[in-house]
Image (cartoon, rainbow, N blue to C red; front, top):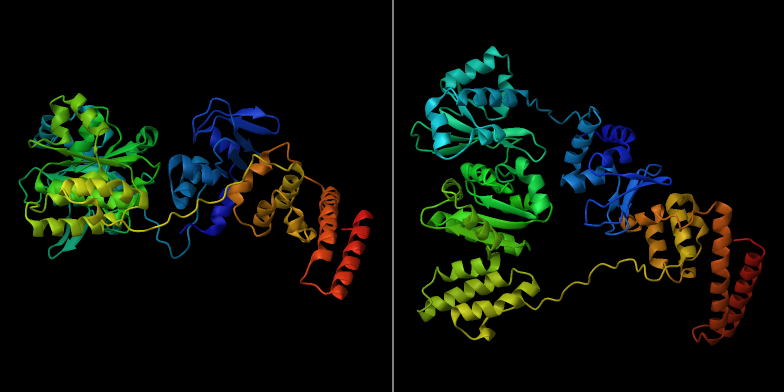
Length: 537
């Protein structure tokens, strides 16, 4: 883990204006800077950056935060990834906790360079790549290489004084009965990158007729094939901008699709889509298109993927290739328009899941139809309430049964979180909230939150240090004043006097109090009002 002290030191070296201006055009606006928000389309700038407070806030869509939050949202990175990205941007050296092993990526990067140089000299491998329709531009873009014999790889590592222990940690070599050996032998190599664009492993295709046509690097601390997607490091910006990600089954599919302009294509690493992939697929909230082969294995994989994605609320659908074609073949045969139509009109996940599961049963047989209904009822109830209501008739229609037999779970929708109602603003109350946000030492001056009539919820949030993201915009609104301590006391007095006067009117009619208690409370409140009118809070 990155040391906390190192993160704090990094923050001290960051300037929010400098960071954001590397991604969007900013203009000076008084003490702050403004820009068109990069997170939603707008023509009039409402994205404000404060150099004094080192924060940003968009008054259009509500996003806001500091430099780290900006990089996380803009680049779709996790917190540690954003920290490392920022450190690289400002040339800051991070420190890691003693119990964290730091890996030197030099050994895998150098080996990849070696493999890339070898490809053009290995006639059989190079001609195979060209025969699949892959251009030299794509070879360079995806860094396609060639792994030679085990001895040649080992000799390269040793002659370049590369760390063999770290090569073993990356799964590049291993120790067998006859000593060290390379894992990738006589294979075309496809480098695989992590989410932070670190080279962490390889995919390899045999050219020597090995039984395993494709292999991947073994599971290591750096490489987890169930959490990575081939080509994502190249495709991610296009995924974010197009709001769509195309998931294929193979390396060549990805390369050829990119070559044809479908530069938002990626591939799973020889494994089915799993729940571990979902956080990655959710970055940028794109529509997901699962594009698999039409063989039995491809259809089964598409079914599993459609179930997982529909259960987790992903939008998109499934495309199945028939007649022995795959995406790479279609690009090679110049069927680009057909591909474009297929990717634009995938079969929705729920529809595909329902149809595919029905096809597993002979629904002409009543017993089989009952089994199909049981399976579909179970699946349907894993979906959101709205999706259940939407697709219950679809199941009934496809099974040709009465819709009452389709079971919909009785689930009430949770209320949406409360938002600040900006249609009714009390500037004085919000100015008090803003002042306390900036000066938490003034909180004891608030003796009763009930003096607020419009923004009591916001005041309580500040006192309890909750929902700060929702309130950040107050700090950047010039019309909401920042009080001095004396001004704050004066404003609190102005709000408190009418509140106490209202209580005075309510006490005589309070049936829960006896006469003696009523008299005492009236006397106490009158005394407080007198003190308040003298300027004492």
